[in-house]
Image (cartoon, rainbow, N blue to C red; front, side):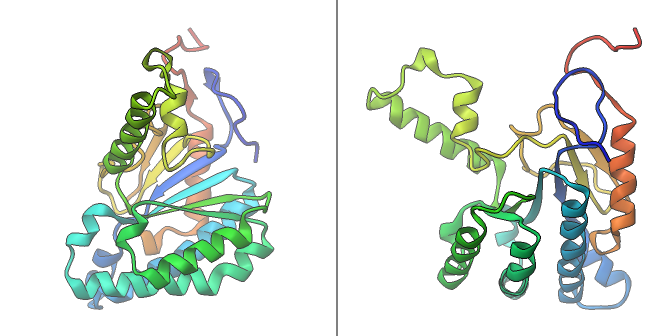
Length: 247
């Protein structure tokens, strides 16, 4: 598989940077007469497989939407289950992630997470910080509007302190202040479960991304299906506002 290295119009090959909205765990479980927690557990197991596949394919980055700022509105019991599963994933996968030379980053409002979980996340980030392989970016307690608001406040503070000329603010300035700074914008955003919305995910970063909305709920999104979606992307033509090469 050939990864996309440019942002030029035309056929671009396989994506280098992929983002996934992992949706449908609860519905997957309910359709099987299982508690929603069983769907979340199946979703964690699926994530393990997809990360391994992304690394094997040579993707530059994979950003996954694990828990949104809006998910805090769910019942307390479900939030507690999700936090336990998230902690279990971080603890259990650290060795394999390090062995595959993946670099792990967490983006989102960390101050809303349990203190012990924040410490575990920081330890994983530190352990994998120098790894040269896949960048696995996990969005937890994440919302894109909150991210943009945080960036705007930081830029406003710099201008008020005289460290930044307002006339010098560019798109690159904003990108540097986002939680995703240093990681390439997604070429492809995938959402599972048949829902066709972006749910406050990477609003700035996905301005020119291609989208794939697939019917499978996240626990049914197999590595084989993942490859199919990537291959479908490779057949598309990205113009970035330019004229089609065929024209």
